[in-house]
Image (cartoon, rainbow, N blue to C red; front, top):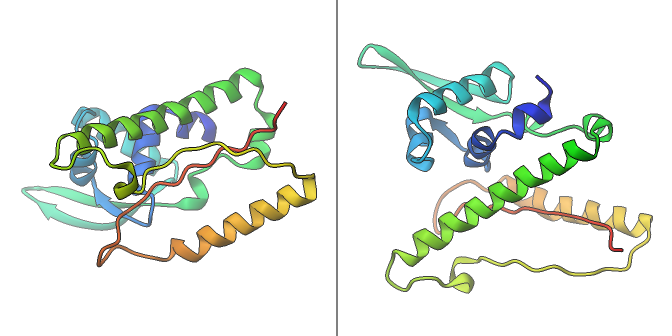
Length: 179
């Protein structure tokens, strides 16, 4: 199975997203985060990702006669490479982008539903939620420099683990050429 086909399945994409931030989770932990995914389906998709090397087993323990595994994401295996992306046709790119946007929308819906259910309700500023589009005039060299700077900014924070007042935050990026 090609990595785009592997990663761009809606359930597998959500599993990958749940493990972002160097998290180690059991299938039970994953089910608690993805309660709308049937357990059997979740186990099947976790198995597919593990068999493909996208997830690695970092711990095992015996629980009531069975083995509970703890998984961690293998970041290098959890993305579509530049060669595969270059070989994708228009419909494959549309499907990939559509899956990405659908996953982003589903994450946003889960935040809205969860925030609306607590006292104080929706407060995007308090929760650090934002979305905006900006137009920049950049030549190819300037754009490459921007990408390098953004990678540096994010790389400096990827080593942060959970603890204290830290919350896991999802950062999604989309770059499109303007017309």
